[in-house]
Length: 424
Image 1: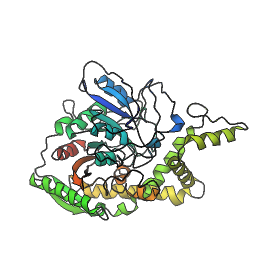
Image 2: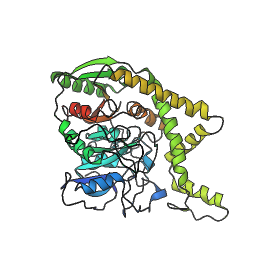
Image 3: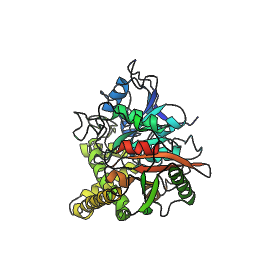
Image 4: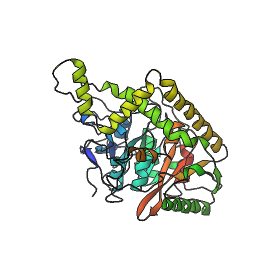
């Protein structure tokens, strides 16, 4: 059994009846659970117990699901490997000695290890899809606004979405059915396109006859050779089932990682300003004035990666640099959206490897943050464009899991689920 999957193991029973009755669910530890510790993988919130449930937790409980614990995660969702958690790393149950991916690594590992039937994670730049790929399970990043973020501790508000994990596409779609839909407490939410008698799970037919798949060549450049081979094998399987593929170009992808990290770190520096030790969270025992106590609280409460991102984000938003960095990043974001719209006007879905590399060895990337950031090259553009995506197991290279990512138009989850269910 993989170790350190849960930060808090506590059973929260759902209603007696419902579509998730009899199912166990792991919940990422940045999603509020009333009366149960919610730490965000940080010393800052190590003892924080929220007084309310997130909307997605309310909906899971109402659907009969039983929550079995709060899953380990990169601190405040910042990381690609699940190694920045204050509570230690999670080992990948599908590849012992390797990372499970991040930041929702505990959620993906819980499903892969059989510790939970389903799981909830959050995806700001790939944090559902990356661990799904590394752990050999299914993960869905919904369209921005399809799932309420009420009760999700914010990292990058304009980018993140809560999404489901499962061992099958149909299972992930069934959990999406429960959590999707508008919420009065989150003004960004949207009801979605489904009719009253339709479900996302019903779309998991595996019918890809006539499906047009666009393959962005930029998302294959520089990828690990074994990952690329496994990806093309999966595309060949889809072709055998009646799909067709053609190459497309997304020129803006070259600047997507830089734009993403400027935007995400800027939003993080703003969001994490609230953690000052006054209202909740870690409070340093500091003599002297309030500024000294505030500084020491944040010095002790945040880990290195969180401090790095707060500093970079604050710099990007500072007077004299806002236009140079943040405004340019938002311009690049608009370019990314435009490229995706053009590519999807000629294809039903776009396909790429989810991650350009197999799972890292534990400890391998910690000394090189840039390597970790660049590993997100295939996932972050989707968040910049506010589009839905799914990662499904495509096979293995050298015994290590490889994920296939499919990207669809806004609120095109049905199409993604239909296509992905031909694979998993």
